[in-house]
Each structure stands twice: as C-alpha cells, then as structure tokens.
Length: 229
Image 1 (tube, one colour):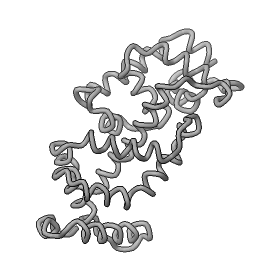
Image 2: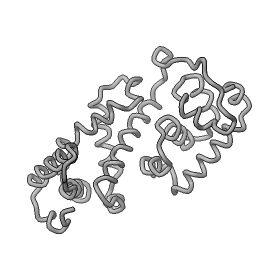
Image 3: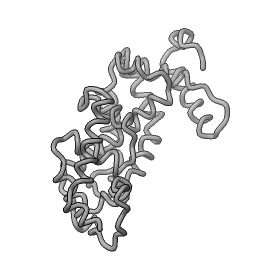
C-alpha cells in the first residue's frame, strides 16, 4: 500500500480520482492499491473535510446501495434504497471519530464497519415499525430441531412472525434484542455486532455474556421448546 506520509501531500481531487480508479481495479480483480481510499476516508473523518466526504459518497454510493438492496429487511420497509444509503453515511460520520478511526487499520476493516452501519440503520428502522402479517409468512410446517441446535433453528426461522414475537418476549432489554436479531437473523459474529453497537456494550466480553445468557434462557423455556416441536 502507498505510504501514508506521501499520500497526505496529495490534494483531495487527486485522491478521489485515484481512489475511484483503484476501486474499479479491485472490482475487476486486478492489482490495486487501497491507500488512496483509506487516506480519503482519513481526511473526511479525522480532518472532518466535507469535500473529501462528498467524494467518498460519489465513489461508494453504488456499493452501499448494493448492500442495502441485498438486505432482507428492505422488503418490509416503506422507504427507498437511497434513504438507507444516506442513513448509513450519517451513521458512519457520527459513529467514527478520530479515536475509533485509529483502531481501524486498513480499508477492508473500514468497509466492514461501513457494512455494519448499513445493517444497523435498517434494523433500527424495522424495530420502530410494526411487522405486517401481510408481509411475513406465518410459521408453518417447521421441522423440529435437535435439542442441542435450537440456535440454528432460530437462525433459520426467526423472521417468521409468530416465532419472532415469542422469542422477543423472552428478552430482558434492548441489548438482548440487538444480539438476538444480529446473531440469528443476520448471522453476524459477536465482534461484528460489537463494532456496530459499541455504545450498547462495555466490551466484547460483555456481549458474549449477554448472548450466552439469552441462549440459555431460550433453551430452558418450555413454551418455546413445545412450539418448535
């Protein structure tokens, strides 16, 4: 990757042009250099350079839109793709400060964090709206899982309305709802959930504890076990 010291001498317009070119190279699976894009993000986030941020939007809007478009939660939302694209950019802008950016070592990690922002804004929107029975199938003809694999069954079926309502009644707070949806609906790892919601958990270890306690409660619940069988 190009030296960061040298890149800091380049103006925003050239950085943006190089970033766009290197991004095209990446998607065409040819040799590319991520340094230009990383430096463009650094200008936007660390220096709060509005012009750099505008360039980032121009370059990455199609990628963010593709992530939004593939998200399973989009089908139940009454907003267009562009709405969630803008929300994801706003969330990245507000969530990543100089300290957070210093913990993100490369462009790949930064884009993974950006993808978590996409997931977060769609899930947050969904939580603020009622599920519609006309948009979701009622759980039916399900196959009973092995007693040791209730997590997998919940992963496969959680978006079904009846099961979702039953399971969410077993949660105790907002953090457990976050862990429930991100783990079992979107199949994200604890580290990815923590990256998307660092304000909800004091540490990654605490997130693991919340998830473990939730799973134990689900396993023990007799009504849920009867429902699944």
